[in-house]
Length: 114
Length: 112
Image 1 (cartoon, each protein chain N blue to C red):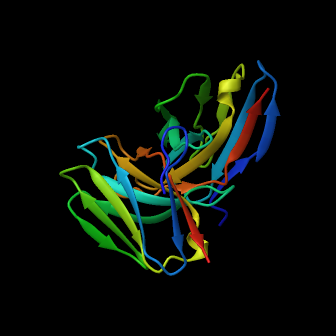
Image 2: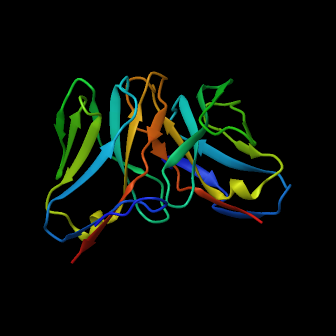
């Protein structure tokens, strides 16, 4: 049981490049989330999904896109990377988001845009 | 001591002391609160949670207190150990299913 797995762990992008951060969970959780964490700050919600085929914006969605074609996978797409997107990205999942608040987090993906 | 502005608040304690980490939350409609611990280079890990119909909940060496009147949450760690050194975040859940809003975090440093 691997939990929440994120890849890659580290990535350097040039301004204007695009990439996808992968996230997969093997806990059969229906809720999945993407957060970003800037240095010295808390986590801010980018996008979330309550089930396959359903996604919605969080607090800071601009510059990102997501899809949820399966229960297990929730990739985050960065189009036209900008220095402001330099951050650590965390994927998380939870089961029955209303009845329990515990989110299970991945180890994070550190992205630098130069 | 504590620092404000662009830096996270910090708390330094001696091993064996009790630690109290405070958090002010923003949404009076939030019904669920969680404390997470984040060690360097890792994702946040669940510590303890509390629902809005409670004012205190205890776990192993940890206690969470909730004061809805002033929208304040605290985490008490008993007999703090060097392994407790980390950044601690409180999070609240508002009316949207599952979504957590995280606070800024507090750096706890435990000196042997």
